[in-house]
Structures are given as C-alpha cells and as structure tokens.
Image 1 (tube, helix red, strand yellow):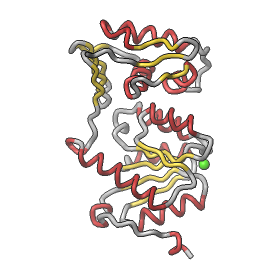
Image 2 (tube, helix red, strand yellow):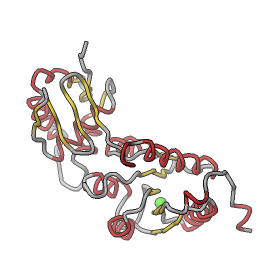
Image 3 (cartoon, rainbow, N blue to C red):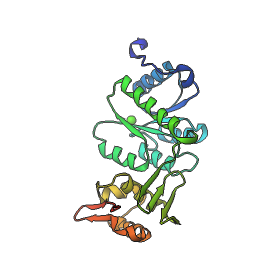
Image 4 (cartoon, rainbow, N blue to C red):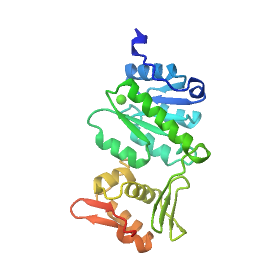
Length: 247
Ligand code: CA
C-alpha cells in the first residue's frame, strides 16, 4: 500500500543521506507521505506534529532543511518562521512552507520573513521533491555552503546574513522590526505593501498594534536611509512600496 505513495524521482542517494530534514506537519497522512518519500531518496527525516515541538527540534537538531506546515497546533508556522529567521544560529536553515489553499497571504508573509520557498496542498510528490532538491542546490552553490544574501541598491545594502544595514558604506543600527520591514520592502521592489501586511511581517500579531504603528516604523527606517529616504514611497490609501532610484 505504502509503495503506491512512493515516487522515485532520482537524486544522489549517498549525498542525500548526509542531509537531515525536519518535517513539521500535523496531518498524519501528509506527514507520512512526505516522510516516506524523503526517506526513499536517502534523506534522514525527523518529524514533529505540533509547532512547539517543531521549534524545539529546529533548535536542538539544527536540521539542513525544514518543511513547515503553516497551520499547526501549539505554534503556527509563521511564528516558527519568524523565530528561526530572527535567530543568528538558525536563520541559515532553509524553510519550505507547506500551505493550504486560502493561505496565500500567509505565504507572502512567510516569504517576507525569509522562508525560502513554498508549496501548496494538495501537491504532487514529484513537485515537492523537486523543491527540496532546488533548496539544497541553492545551499550548495552559495559560498561556504551557506547563503550570504545581500540586497544592494545604490548606496544602500542590506546584509541578510550579517543582519546589517549599510548606508554609504557605514553601518546603521536597526531594530529587529525595522530590519524585517526593510527586508520585505527591499526584496520586493515595486510591490505595494498594505499597512496590515507590513505590520504582519515586521511586527507580528503577538502584540497589539494600531495599523498606524507601522507608519512610525517606516518613518524611522526612512530617516536611517539618508539620501535614499525617498525610495520608500507612500502608496496613498494603501501603504508603502520600495522604488529605488539608482540610475
Ligand atoms: Ca496543518
């Protein structure tokens, strides 16, 4: 019966056996299908069925990749993503979000938080395996085996790995909220973000915030960008968009 669920999609079994993947998923059937298929390609697989256990296992195992369901008991996937990407010892771990239909907004937030990729349920097993291989290819092709990502526009550089903002070659201190805000904007130039979406990305839903709270964070970020302050543009009645003027 189980063999019906297994799909061989190739890949280097010996290499895969050096990789550990943590699957955080509360739906037993889906968890089992993912687990079996990853194991069939040689990966070492660990599973967690709720968010709290999942986060704890990320911290203790430091897996090479996390497949993260978004709707989870205990702690939801976005909160896990936020905590992992805020932790300098964990943020290099690639996260592939596994989302259900109707969670598109959460996927956008997750990508803004630094998740690497996503796949929507129901998915084909072959597609999932392809995403996993692609994530490892990105890791392997980055220098020193890790991604060192920098977002650079003119004199503004956001170093995602070092978690630093550089303006005109000088490091400018940012709070964690400001950094998340900048990251979302700089990773998506030209995209109009609503205040609510930026609030979800930068502040999260654990503290009560007025929608206008984000305005004061945007204002603080602008003041740190120096000459480039005008690149964060107000989209009237909506929110903000990053439009660099680097020519
Ligand atoms: Ca779920």
